[in-house]
Amino acid sequence: MKILGTGSALPKKVVTNDMLSEFLDTSDEWITTRTGIKTRHIITDERFEDLATEAAGRAIDAAGLCPDDIDYIVCSNVSNLFITPHLSSIIMGNLGMKGPLCPTMDVNAACVGFVQSLDVCDALLATGRAKHILLVAAEECTRFCDWTDRNCAVLFGDGAGAVVLGQGDSLVASKITTIPMPDVIVYQNPMEATPFETREGIDTHSALVMKGREVFRMAVTSAARDIASVTADAGLTLGDIDHFLLHQANLRINEAIRENLNQPQEKFPTNVQRFGNTSSASIPLLLDEGVREGKIRRGDTILMSAFGAGFVSGIVILKY
Ligand code: UT7
Image 1 (cartoon, rainbow, N blue to C red):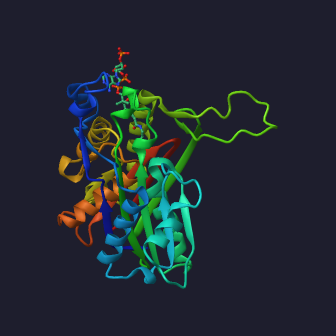
Image 2 (cartoon, helix red, strand yellow):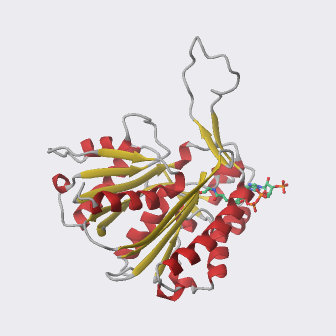
């Protein structure tokens, strides 16, 4: 696997903490000190799938390819109007691909979806199943939230990041783990009633609920433990890592991980202050920004680390 190009897209509407405090019992002071978040981009009149396609198109351009060069599309996505058809098939149509049309697949691994998809794509490329994979991570997290619940609504933002992957040996190491904990972060879809279902309460739709403190603790513990061990197992030291791209859920989580690893701040780019938690899109958004600003260069060693609902934890180390 090798990253050939990156791209991203954000909705145009920027919502500040002060704007939220107009209708929620919250404040810029609380949100900033507890999370680091100052603003987030939220979809208004855009279509989510267009945003995802925009990020995809930019990554294909950056790779110097055209849509018909793509022979596999993978989408990391949890928050989307359509359960079916899957987002990757919608993006394929939006890109105007003429064919021969290729496989499309969506991955739901919550905030770890992009990192886990990289691992899956590496296998697809290594076995020759694909030559050019478009991997898009696109999330409309703000549609999961109860906008009367200050515990969740202030945390999230919408966005999309994408990469085009080609054949190569850039993947240095990966580790994806799941601890089944179905109640730490939960969102239930509405389901249709049937005349046969007799259990009570199972189809009750609820907006996102989260055990924030538990997630916080598990995120810091799992990331610090796995980052150190995966790096060592790959024969590297933490000093060999040029950029730590951590899932952007809370600045305090990232700061705790960084302090635990005892690494300098400049190796830890952040976007949670501007974008909020964009779930699986947060890392490809960081990656694309770093590449466009010339901070991430060819040959750099990147470690990506994410955690999320499941509870899933994922690490990938690769050469850019
Ligand atoms: O992508 C993965 C998804 N999730 C996460 O990564 C979340 C990880 N967890 C966190 O980031 C933090 O736990 C939160 C930001 C969610 C919460 O921060 P906290 O420091 O753990 O606060 P808390 O939940 O313990 O709440 C402390 C207080 C409570 O009031 P009382 O009970 O002490 O009176 C909350 O009701 O803060 C209150 N509170 C708020 N106050 C003002 C909760 N949300 C807000 C708010 N504005 N938006």
